Image 1 (cartoon, helix red, strand yellow):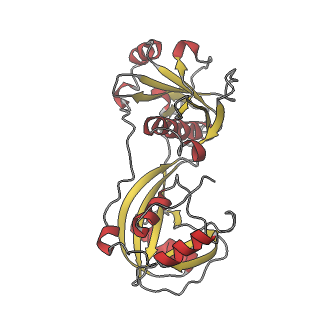
Image 2 (cartoon, rainbow, N blue to C red):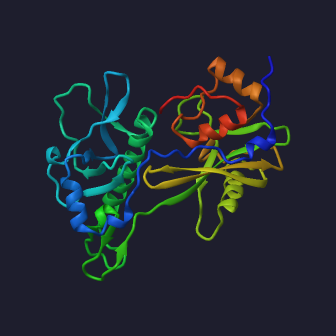
Image 3 (cartoon, rainbow, N blue to C red):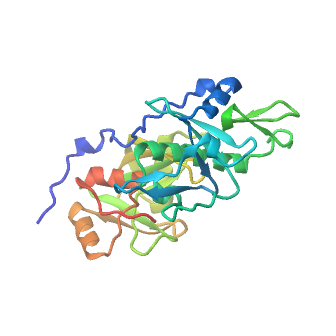
Length: 315
């Protein structure tokens, strides 16, 4: 039975990917030490620990998965590595503590998890908090010294700035723009590729980093040409996704191919194939092809074209 194609007009419309967990980052309070102190001490404030890109999560009796949080007075001691993440719609303030290791738990239900697993399980609120905390932790661990003079920097603005006491430079969290694109041809087939290090059968959209001095559209065209040898005409922006592995922002596109001959680079991309909707359905049903990870914008881009949810996994 044939799969009903989605119209090309629907593909180029922005997709509702970016959800909000209802957290106001309250950035205007980051330099107000008195306000931060009062927020930290409030009995409703909740805190969780992040270490090495992981946090503790646990399953609740009603089947939900939550971040393991605690009141601030129960939180493990730390020095400057206390990051203010924001305030929810009920006025609860949230902090993350960066530690060398996650705290031990008497509760056997709690376990450590990274974003690839947790993001698919947590609520929008908890996912938003964890993404923010992990991104800050990654940056803090990798940028302890001033890039101007080499002096060790100190944390400021509730974890969102590092200041150099020697030369006065201020350093801000780094975000690296990356493009991720679903390539479609004139027959409305999708071009999917697999990287060398991926599990057998895993196919996904193409992606790459934006280089200095180029636009994001130029990056899409260049990356597709470099990885699979296909030329691109129209490029349409779809949606974005924070991707702190360790510090990227994924910018999603649909790109229209003006050529279809595939020549993989053999470096990043091991194999690339054109799929009709029926081709992809049959390949997934047989187990020959595994769909993109469910936590990635790649799955949303493919689903927008495919017309229904994919059977995805965490990896």
